[in-house]
Image (cartoon, rainbow over the protein chains, first blue to last red):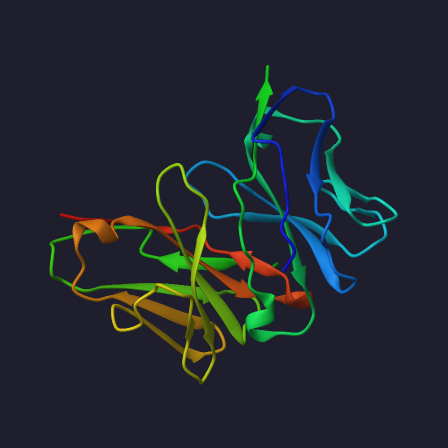
Length: 114
Length: 114
């Protein structure tokens, strides 16, 4: 699975959009980009995933560049409860079994400020 | 939907005893479940992949005789830490492969070995 690079930490003002970048320059054509977040002392929470098209759900939007070498997770209106470590992971999807395993990097600690 | 539970949420045990942690997918069936471990201020580390009805696949460096995994049904996987020692104290998190092969995580189990 391709490696990802994320900033160690970011700040965001409450109510503003939080844009979290991720580089995955070695991503393969069949690898998906997944985003999870982990609030302190809890299990990770699934946010969103995509292959090449931009995706949006009730939590966030995922923007993937045309060459797929980077992506941005957007939280449109950050709240204090969005303070967490955000993980960007690339993974071969939809094949089942061991190929589904997720390898976590160090992620980005997003601190939403009041 | 896609809820995963873990039991217990925390456990304290004496050195040398065994501890069993349960992971259940509550509203979906999971052929594949995963077990992770997380030490303070570190990222999640994948320990093993658990497949229903077959032996688990362990990551390099994880002792299969110490961390026994059983996946007897499509909604339950168990991790038993045998002869636990203080260095096994950690946050143990499971995940289950759900719809679209997306992994959904449990809330974690905090183990403290005295």
